[in-house]
Image 1 (cartoon, rainbow, N blue to C red):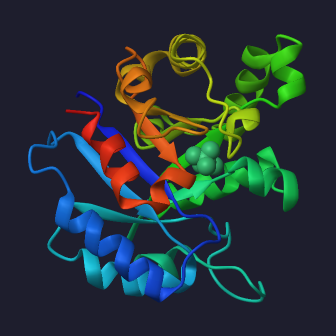
Image 2 (spheres, rainbow, N blue to C red):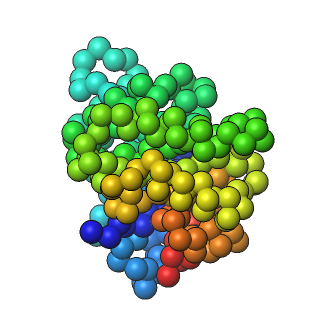
Length: 250
Ligand code: PGA
């Protein structure tokens, strides 16, 4: 089974209905007709916009994603959101363990692991984020860092479950900074993740690059052998840029 490619927008805490409507109208209208069928286009929007965007994308090829999820099924978890609540709004993908959640909201490898298992148990596709800090990058600790994150984050998953996970390698120093990893560095790290860490199921798992991917650099990044797509923050808020990135898969 050949793995799919994934172009996923991460809107983060941006947009209200007005902006979302304008953005998605353009994305839907201008989506390249010849986008290969193995490319999943996903928009990961704020919780409050899930229903709204889901209504807009009905009948299109665009899929809906959330940016976080609880590891619990239901109950006394004030402020959290469950898998069944996401599924009801049409969600198929959920970002888990984004570095902003790890750094600012105390997300740990242990909670990331629980959330991935819970997402899979509910047939949601987790977009599992990993990546090194600038300090780790400068010390040459990139591979050791992602190795630890992969081991802990995917701990206890069966091979069958692993094939349903999308990995997003995002160097933290590249996120929102305009500094992109060079296509060669990104390729090397992702090839390391695939060959050394995922082993038997590696060929079936999409691995994305994230961190200041934009309309200009997408083609170079996406043409690397092991880079199966992108997790796109800032550039996903502009229809033209997001569509250029998606179009780079053609
Ligand atoms: P960026 O964000 O494209 O704005 O760097 C990527 C991400 O955080 O997923």
